[in-house]
Image (cartoon, rainbow, N blue to C red; front, side, top):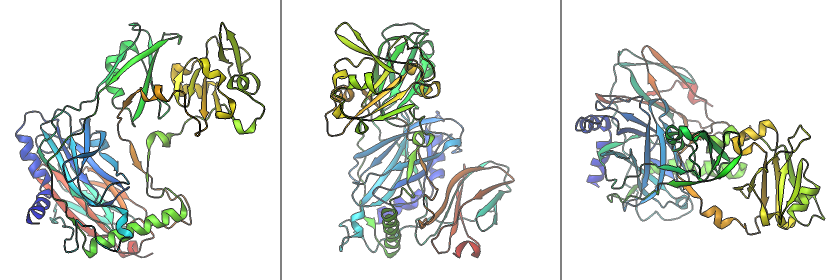
Length: 528
């Protein structure tokens, strides 16, 4: 127990330790600052955090870094890996915890591949089973409370607080990174800082994305299609060295398929893709007794209430969603649901009879599919890109005779606007065919053999209330980091339906260390 408390106290000296550790190394680009929004989470929660590169003076820098974030259990086993691309300008990250995590202490370990240092912090995760159980988890201590961080008066920071905003100014000439959280301290825990230590990562998990095209033509085009997202990254082969860095920063994990075309868009052939294999690291074991005092129980009880409300209203309130899903995809120009048609025997008959702007041409012993542009009468010279249950191909072959009762839908993209989504791959149109779930995908083995890319984590918070009748039970009104440039910076937030006394918690991070400050919000903010 004493050892655990000492470990927590050491966390508050994050940047002081960081400055000492950084001074020991000549390379100034491989250390990370990390601030986690809270120390208490439940399985299935999203963990908001700030991660930013720092120099040997422990000052945040603009340098953009790719990093691995490991979620480690008390035995030292890696239970999840996420990748982020971070810099001072985009330090906000989010990690989604698995619903299956057991109650216990977990470490978040941030590491830049090749660095001799890692930044880590401990969080407490509680499985939702604690809500319905009449007994405490075996590793829970009801006498153990959350440790508060020491508040240090920061003479350089001044406040101007309103009902839903804060104007913060500094009399320092030095630009400082400020992390802010507005929350109800009775229903949430304060943020925690990462501590820099010597790295335990023993394998090089540097991302690698190697492509080998069938033709070494510098003017050819390479299209990298991310199957799970339906997104295309495209570039000229002569720019492959420059574009390799962009590929490894693609948001979201996905199976990958690559194809080469000439400069006019005529298909050449598939591109062999080799992606680095990600290996789990074994870290040192650590204490696994979680606090379970009355204060912790109150926080967990509020989380239970929020989960119950979410179930009643069937919303994604308080959740996160990927950026790629927010941007939205262009809808298909034509959509055909198989349930709307009867008397169709095969997929070939569907294209010949019911799908507009589509035609089937017999070629030797097989059939080939062609499209016509949405607003023209002529037919494309080559066949379209075909997505069969998400697997990309240019000829259906025997799949043309797939029984139509196994088909769920056919989507056609043949307008200029919709084809842009697929780049040069969609020059001659795109057809997406989805089978019904109860039937086996004939391309399942092929899809499983595609290289899988562990992409950049792109989770972002959704703050909008989806239903005007939905109670807004957020105990946290603001979680944000900004560079506080003298003379001032203004922060705004929305109020919550949760009655209580909210508090502005802040931290100034500089080479001198961390200055933590708190301010109670005006009374108008706490009445509802």
